[in-house]
Image 1 (cartoon, one colour):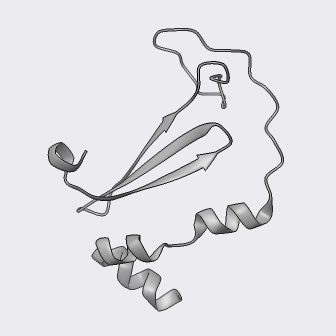
Image 2 (cartoon, rainbow, N blue to C red; image 1 turned 30 degrees about the horizontal axis):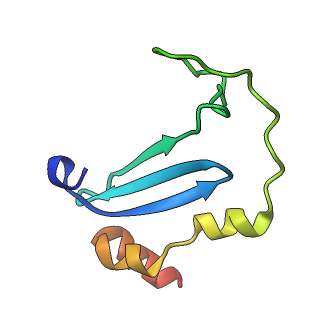
Length: 94
């Protein structure tokens, strides 16, 4: 992502056993990739379409702790230094 698409930073966010890697590109575009263990991989929305492989039956979503959701929504100092248009906006809000 860094060489081929101009990523300037990335952030890893864990949700249970699932890793979400968020790349920020120089153009301010954000690209999210998720990595799921095979034993918990399942559809999580109505538009899910499996291209190959096998998906498990969906399980009920866990209840999210508000503090975790608020933390995910915040800007991190590392990201603020890397992405200029978004950085200025976030710096004004902090």
